[in-house]
Length: 253
Ligand code: 3PY
Image (tube, rainbow, N blue to C red):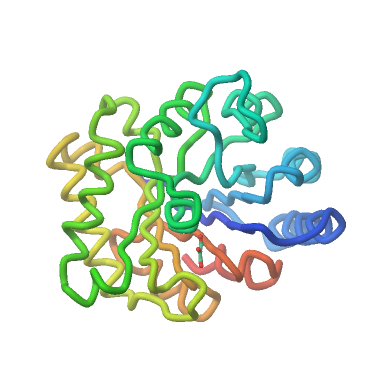
């Protein structure tokens, strides 16, 4: 059985107090509403990580993730945060290769392999993002484009390493635009990516990998998206900043 995962990507939002309030509300709702069988991950900005971890405490199924990590182990890399540092206070996940990092910080497929290696070496689960821009979707070559991202970044890993990676498909044209891929478009891509993973790592392994959908996922479209056979959850942007909306998405399976 594949893991169902809902991960909130706070991006560069919320001050300390707001982050604390949001986390406390989510913790209380998940407990009071007895949400089960879904792995929930909060991915706040770096400065929130430790205080958010404290608030998460032993809340069942609730985990901490960061939005990035360095491709280096340690040393003179001013401003960088290593996977080892994240793991040292109990972070469990790390989002890698979000399209905003690929675009604004010029993260390449090759760099993302190095970051993924760091994450795996320190026991963090990478949430590896992939997705096509609008012009590629309009040209109808989206599957080749996204498969290529996976091939270049991930196909050098062993099956054991690959089995620890979560994929998040986020069409760039649906990020922060209010446009969502239809559930059929999401399913089509997720199935294609799973088949691509199966071609390299075998069907059994591909069937175990959670593939999340991201891109304007909200409480009104989550149920439809999550009902699809190959959509195993979501990476949630704006709606992860509102406790009620986020927990409603978690409850959409
Ligand atoms: C979005 O939903 O817009 C996201 O980018 C989630 O990562």
